Image (cartoon, rainbow, N blue to C red; front, side):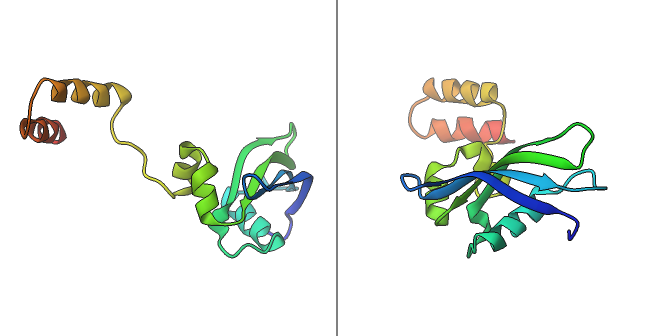
Length: 131
């Protein structure tokens, strides 16, 4: 981790969304890549964040030949702000939300089966799908 250098550029304080947003350049000589968890801890220390869950990293690309990666980072003022603004798929990646089970087609078919039944039977139709 000591061989990794993190630099930020195009830094912007977004007061409407209560976050700091930036482009992150990571220099990692003689290493294939750096994990987002390592980068999250480094950026958390740099921006003096109480909870590292407020730091969101995404869109990293490694330059040809390696040794440099570039991506985006958001540092939210609080976890509530992050939960309000961040897209659900990024919250799922960060472990802050649960992913919906089953495919979209299965969920739609279940919904349409429930429409054909009235009252308590709807629960029975849903339970039959879970067996």
